Length: 413
Image 1 (cartoon, one colour):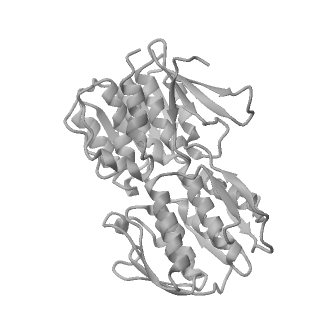
Image 2 (cartoon, rainbow, N blue to C red; image 1 turned 60 degrees about the vertical axis):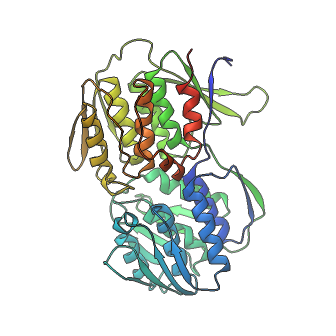
């Protein structure tokens, strides 16, 4: 190990943490979860699950701007006796929920939209599902599928779930299935990959310890830093290349830009891993890159900013749903890059970053979106006076981001 490596501590995976919190709640808290995410979304989910446990059957569940939390809780509340209201902030109430609501109604569960059909807030009358067979459109979010699979162990006959289209972010559906299997729950998938079968849990699993992987989404911002500071070696502690997280696609994209990553194992502990990043030693040889982001849409802000900073032409495909995230990310990325002199063209299915010369702007607007803030932050390595608006927004997924970022920013190697 190079003792001059900048050692970065990443948070635990928010996606894995939230799935295990749901599973643990549904099967009675049999697992001890190590390295749980400290993200605002995970803290919120823990709080709301405690509220369900202590609420006596009814309550109002406020999900702030956490789409995954709202989508995971909706099916859970639908099978929890009582009258429940599920809602969130203004942006969350604009994000699509119709496919999940329709799927729950197919199962005979009562979910009523109290303002606009297909959106939060909803009133839920918890009950027992009448049907175990359901279909769902996963194009807007794979979380619709994961949310339904997660409640299957508590359904009297399990669930048979068919996707009507190819899903966005399929690796995160497989992450859900892997977690269920690890919890001792039978999960099968049809030969065509469209239908999932999850069994009712027959007996309580043996208590065991679950360790959560480090978060690849959070790692992506340090890849951009390595790109901009090739004189540094950045070491991402605890991260592993062979991950079930869809955002591990970070490595493949940045290899196109010349960033090399090397996995390192401790000679003393076989499970201890880290990844060392080294930026390109020479000018990027491939001035045109193309990447399909359908399975990793949360990485689009990172990829777009990195490509603009590298001065390459990058075509990012599979971006149709990024306008439906915490902000309209298509608009946010385009607007902020253009304010800095970048050139961006967008269509429903792709975003193209054209070579340009960036200059600092004041400040970078974040649209109350954690991923916009963190995607643009590495540009401070090139423009030291650059400011990021509303920097505390990173708490949603990476509360310690600025402390870890400063380890790179303040390194004068």
